[in-house]
Image (cartoon, rainbow, N blue to C red; front, side, top):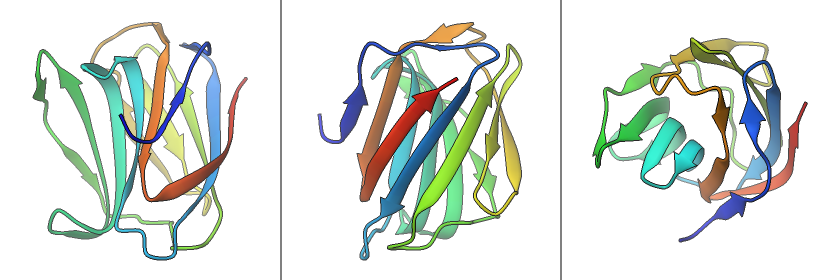
Length: 134
């Protein structure tokens, strides 16, 4: 498996996960996965500079039972290649509230309904500098 897997950290309802990083200069896309395992992902957030037919679009989904669920697309795109970003993800029983560097926000439903996730995985063309849960 490529990317960065965060181990021994659990993300619980009411907490905020703060991720800092920088997309590479030639980045096409990167992804943040939160869930129970690689086969059970509650939040897959995939900012795409130019990938899979999308340009400057954030695609979110969840993965369960061997298949992807319904994609949600977000037209706001507060990322630039080679420019630091900070994303804050606050997690409730109902949804994930994602706050972006420019102050914009998006909601993604907590389709799994779990109160704790232990699997946090980053992939794609971004360097992750920091991961903090408070």
